[in-house]
Amino acid sequence: MFSNFFLKSFRILLLPFALLYWLGISIRNWLYKKNIFKSASFGLPLICVGNLSVGGTGKSPMVEYLVEKLKNSFKVATLSRGYKRKTKGYALAHENTSALEIGDEPMQFHLKFPDVPVAVGERRIEAIPQLLHDRPETQAIILDDAFQHRQIRAGLNVLLTDYNNLFTRDFYLPTGDLRDLKSNCKRAEIIVVTKCKPDLSAEEKKKIINEIGPMPGQHIFFTAIEYGEIYHVKTKKPSKLHDKKEVLLVSGIANPRPLKKLLEEHSQTYYMMQYRDHHIFTIDDLNDIKKRFESIEAGSKMILTTEKDAVRLAKFQDQVTELPLYVIPVRHHFLFEEGLKFDELITGFIKNFKQRE
Image (cartoon, rainbow, N blue to C red; front, top):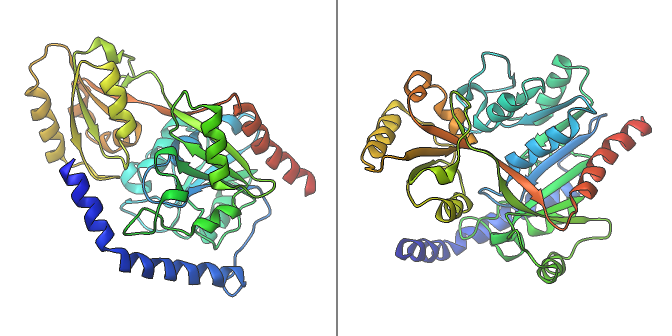
């Protein structure tokens, strides 16, 4: 609690830098608005998934949700920046690709959907033509974390905002977490409030909608986190969280709060080893994890991690095979029975785009 208070107090002291940051992004967005900086569009459906802030709002699970819903009806591909990878430029995932080559989130997409093209490239405006050259059959591209990258004009923008840190209540970096203007929410066709309470009331839903103040034609949805069945990182054998007395949580994600809450509710005792977001695990890290796990005296125990962290631990295949290292999948659950409406908007965008051609 004290460290949290200290961090918040320190960030308030950085207010002058936040105002300078706001000025910088305001000028940049004005230049795009006046068409001084150009935005390019492409002749196929582009669906952008993004947010206005740094930190976890659930972009990766949303990309996975879209791929799952679309892949049987359309030839879709994903394009990400490939954050913290060890390579540069455009790359298309193949059977021998590793997370070091394309980044942890794209690797996660590639492992889950091996038949879906997964590409990375810092300059998406250059990567899209390369992806289409490699996979000319592609009918739609899902752009991961590209909302603030104005060089490309997507046909459908899905903007995510965390229920616990709505962009309307946030401030600009480094005092707050906003990396883009609040007013840019108007560019999104769909806004999704993520990580809501599963029992969010209709009254609170209405208050949040009024607070966001959607434009005519904008759609707002609400989702809660839903966890899938945990499975062993190597053997894929499923297990139950409540079967274990003590759990060691290994987390290198931006916002582990929902996962910690899950463990508080479904495990007797848990311990946590927290790393920075997108942390690249070393053999020393793995040895530290082993030592910490061995120090837990309970007979029934496990190590639990996220899917994003698991792809960064996969390089230690021999070492993790014998460890009780389990992975927990995360997905979006649409509240108020509005998932079908969301799906129809997405599929309708692609179908109508194809009809216009």
